[in-house]
Image (cartoon, rainbow, N blue to C red):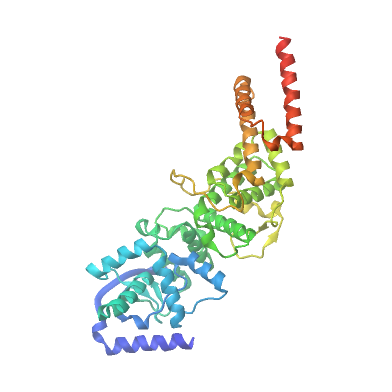
Length: 431
């Protein structure tokens, strides 16, 4: 508080003694539901502080905090440098384009700051300005044009201002899906309702969409804790689509009346699939497996036999409530919104994720593949010729000299196949 008061007095003193800092510009913002025009000033960067709650690098910042075990203090020079690094490295190509534009035409749009110097909008520009000033020594990079908010601004106002300025259609891509989810969560923490958050999203999100996104964030956090990476949101950056599909799977199964304990097993298995390196396309196939009784039984029985790392911990609703262990009947609803609200991802080649072992050796992948094949066979039960052709092709592919054929499991399978073949042969001969 002392540092904040000192900084706000320094800013006031600078403006008072440098009349030329007041520019003939204003920008409109929404405060307490009403429009207010903010005066723009040319402020020295050394009087500004980075905003560690900046939505653009929320995941990156939380990952940093998780690894270092502490928050960063923008008032400390060493911490400010760490924040600057995070901002410059989020999207290096976009940062390079921004830097080129600033060199060519300068700052076009004013940033927004609190009365005590914290930057609400314009953190990355500030980072680029600081770097350019260090590289060139030119004084023009030592100042930013900033609109100053009044002292009475609320947390809700701050969230809305950043959302309005940074969540336009052109700007939203820079957030990334995880940072977007975290930004919605910050809105809830600021005291906004899901309806109010949706109203700030230019009509692109309904209240139901916001609720679904918040539920997905809880699901992601449950997964991160499950794999021992609590708070490391960057670990989920490339697998966001997996959780969209998990929500759809759970929603459909809940609608179909699937037993809550079975839903828990399915969620557990989906997490294990992600950990094993499955694509989100594979997650989608779980509904096809579950709708076929034989395949579903095989899947659920197999799940019980797989040794897993730890029990899933379920959170109660999109809040920061205490984690509840293994109570799917009470806490699974949060993950089962039937319409995920998320737009379908563009068609692309699935990214291969890291796996502890090869896919052919992983029991999770093996169970998924076997259950998928069982489901497909069930769907073709009225097409015996096709099934027999597939079976013959598979048998012809078996290497007769493989040592695996000497294992007991192989012997048992061969005997079972021989029994079925004999039955089919008798039927064919008697017709």
